[in-house]
Image 1: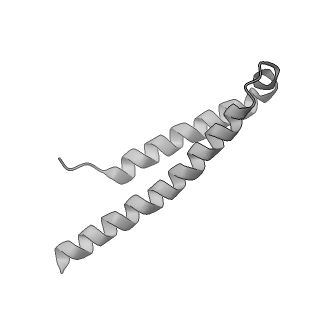
Image 2: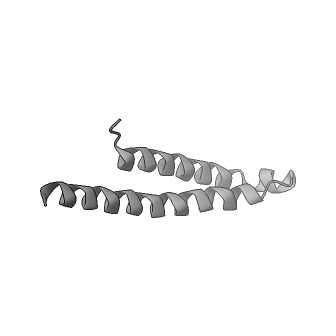
Length: 69
């Protein structure tokens, strides 16, 4: 099955970014409930998502080059 991996990973990264924004806006409340690590979890999700986007783009480019050659 063919899928658009770049779009899928990008969508996931956008969701993590929204979670990060929400966690930052609610940081005081999260800290009061002992959930201050959620900010870092969301930040890690964004970072890993960006790494993932780079990886799937490189893989897509390599596949296209292999198909041409």
